[in-house]
Image (cartoon, rainbow, N blue to C red; front, top):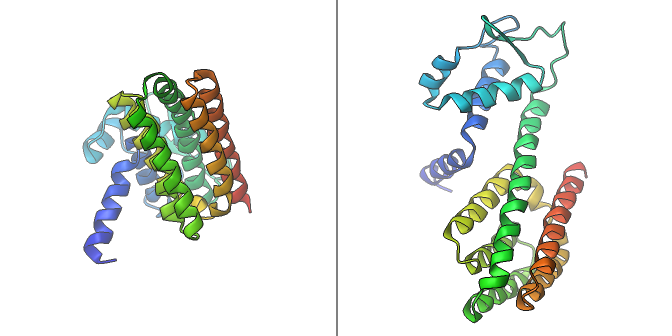
Length: 244
């Protein structure tokens, strides 16, 4: 990959992160580098807003995440203060960073389930014969890629293609945009883990087939139940892969 392509990829990754997570990571970097030491006061909300060009809510969410990690205290009339390790053991920075991602992943999964349940419900009611053919083609492509051999990026694209096809069948452009955005964000945070999950693709494809059958039968309850089970199973498999 060329340097320019690498820079563009990095820029795309940053855009996908939530602004509050970017603020959290910025502060974590300063803590990690020793720029902010125990007892130091963090920049004020206004200073962070100006320096990072973000809104007040993003700054407050980032500070709340660090409070939950026991890394800072927010004291009325004083501001945010870096905690002293003597008061409470500060965990390893890699663990802290991963924990922040876990918070983001949990919220993304929760949102993804809610959004995709709505999308599959509408797709079951609204999808045209053409829409159904697109969903079938996406499933066929997933099988083709799986049979062609292990290629994690290709498998993930095929998986995403199936979910996008369902969202398109909902005939709701907002849902389509949300499904794509949430899936992209989730995959960015857990790319390495998903790369290790190629062996689970047979199960994923079977679950996709079950979802498709329910859509074809115009059974909204069955389609939503199958989709929920699919996403929750994927979450369990992901946690298992991470602990392996």
